[in-house]
Structure formats: C-alpha cells, structure tokens
Amino acid sequence: MSRLELLPAVDVRDGQAVRLVKGASGTETSFGEPLAAALAWQSAGAEWLHLVDLDAAFGTGSNRELLAEVTGRLDIKVELSGGIRDDESLAAALATGCTRVNLGTAALEAPEWVAKVIAEHGDKIAVGLDVVGTTLRGRGWTRDGGDLYEVLARLDSEGCARYVVTDVNRDGTLTGPNLELLRNVCAATDKPVVASGGVSSLDDLRAIATLVPEGVEGSIVGKALYEQKFTLEEALEAVSR
Ligand SMILES: O=C(O)c1ccccc1N[C@@H]1O[C@H](COP(=O)(O)O)[C@@H](O)[C@H]1O
Image (cartoon, rainbow, N blue to C red; front, top):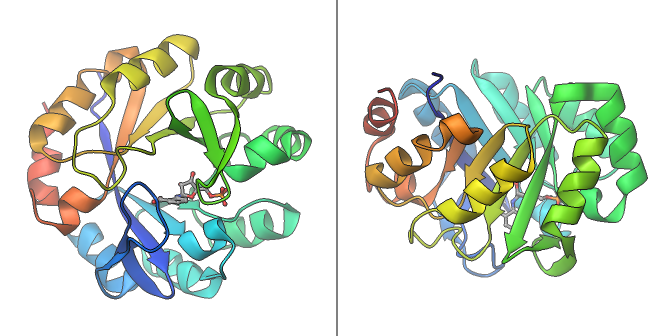
C-alpha cells in the first residue's frame, strides 16, 4: 500500500510566507521569506511543496515572479496554486517547471476552459475543491460557487486527474481534518484526493493516512509545521508505516 504523501504549504501574500485562519484576508501571520521556508521544507525531506499565490487568489495582486523563482530553486515537486484562471496564467504557471497546478475559481466560473485544459494537460491539472459544508467557494474563498458533488461529477466526467479538498472552516485553525468530508469525496470519485485543512498533530496525519485505501493520496500541512506542533521529519516518519 502507498504511503500518504505530505505537501508542506508555502502561501505567499505581499511577498511573504503567511498562514491565514479559514482563508480570511486580514488574518495573516507572517513566517518570513517564501524561498527560505521552501528550502527548509526541502532540506527536511519534503517530496512536494504546495505553493500558493494568495494575492492572485484574492485578486489583490500577484507574486508570480517570486513563485517562479521559488519553484526554479527547488529540486522537489511543486503544486502551484492561486489565480490560475486563463490561458495566460496557466502558461506562466506551467513555465515555472512545477509538477502540477491546482485550479480553484476557474473550475467554478470557467467550466468550459477547465474541461479544455484537463484534456490538454492531463495530470498536470488538479482541481481544488474548497468547501464550506458541501458548498464550493471561489475568488479567495469569498464567493459561493456551487455544490461540491455536482461539480465533482462534472469534473470526473471530463477526466480531471486529482482533487485537492479543503475544508475552509478548518484551514489554519489546528482543529483537525474533516475525515468525514474526505471519506465522502473519496466515495464519490475514483480519482486521488489530497487532503487540506485542519491538521494539528501527528495523530491527525495518521488518521488521514488510514484513508489511503479509500483514495486519499496526500495531505497538505501548513500551520502545524509553522507553529512547530511537530517537525516535518516527525510527520514523514509518522506516515511511513
Ligand atoms: O490556501 C489558502 O489559505 C487560501 C485562502 C484563500 C484563498 C485561496 C487559498 N488557497 C489556494 O488558492 C486556490 C484557489 O485559487 P484560485 O481560486 O484558482 O485563484 C485554492 O484551491 C487553494 O489552493
């Protein structure tokens, strides 16, 4: 059986690595230079980085050059996210050499374009299903964007390769992952699921790892690492068995 992949997160706002609470603009805690954070996770053994342009997601600006620099300096796989909503932003994201991109708002507001890029780029495209209850959220998680299971069925029928499932109300709260949501999404799709939101402890990661047979492939880890609830080395060890 595969082990759970871990994706430390570097979310960038105004050039700084930050963590938000429930994705709300204005709740930022800064953790310094994004490149330093990314290199630290790589040195600690990360195989993946989840790298987010929050300004692009919120529509308040762009950290595109900085994210391209960070991606270019890493040897590990990068999942790039935030503000990838059209041909131009997708081309720029893919040109960084990232392993895959994660689309959020576009999957809700530009379904035809998303179907096209899924057909063109296959598993280089993941879709972020960012939910409150079973309602999807877009535009920096500020706007409702439809029903989770309806959108999932549509994306599945278009061949979407992978989903990044975030419980918005758990994100940045250290209150534990929404295992029921993950189970329900895995039951609704055969495609791999990356869990996001709420991880606070090694036991949370072990609990997510029990869902690998159901289809959970990985877990994003953010605040718990930055607030030193555990080290990345400990997390990798915890999910290695
Ligand atoms: O990661 C966050 O904390 C976050 C908070 C608020 C909005 C977005 C956030 N993250 C990532 O951005 C994409 C969505 O970006 P877009 O809608 O495609 O522009 C989302 O899936 C998260 O990966």
